[in-house]
Amino acid sequence: MSLCSAPDVAVLASNQGARLQSAALKHRCAAHPFFSYLQDCHLNRAQVAALLKNYDAHASVLRRLLLKAATIMPDEAVGYILENVRNEYGNGSVENRHQLQLKDLASRAGVSDKEWASVSIESGVRSFIKKATSLYYPLKHKGASSYYKPAIAAGAITATEILALEEFRAMLKPFSKLGLADHVWFDHLLVEQEHTQESLDLASYFSKDSKALAAVRYGFESMLAATVDLYDGLLSALLAAEHS
Image (tube, rainbow, N blue to C red; front, top):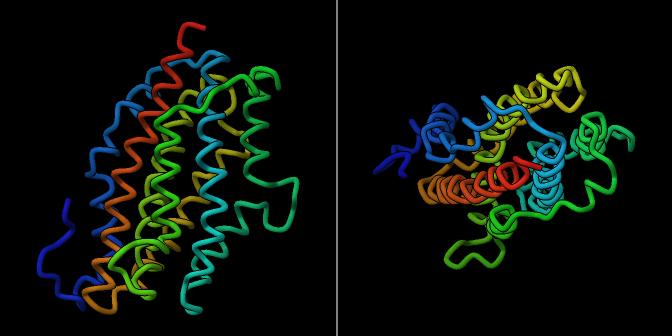
């Protein structure tokens, strides 16, 4: 996928947010069967455990990777990430960490600690984690200067945040059938809108020249491709537990 060719930097900087959102939602990962499965399914307890445990595996890594990404950002760009990180870790309240919200959702759906511990992490999720690590913290990326490496991370973060909103919208439907639509974890439907805008602002920060913009695009497109692996893994987890 290519967002543009022979880009006019001034024009792209002004409308990059709309271009990125459109590109993400047109990418094949946004039409992954994972989404259509969630529209019609009635999750059993084993599926809840499998889905949330695998989702937690990747989300926990991304939280840590955001912290690492912040360390390589120019000072002017750090703020776009830190508010996201603070929110993920409960805005200063240990009890409100998003990981604990996810685990509470599983518990309220009837998943025991034993069932949670028995869930395996799917290969697609593991593959995504490996690829995401190299994009959020691309210090070993060849051919990218110290300035353009943060731009790669900015593109990757932006892709993640745009798709996260779609993920929570899709997951809300089956959990609504379980009477859990009002669970605090689904506050992400509002939170992710804010995170998406912050990430778009971060990506726009690096739209100062064509090379920086190309680095953003590389990180963005690479993360979209990696997300196919994530959704492969999440769908596999659901299908494997379908008849449990």
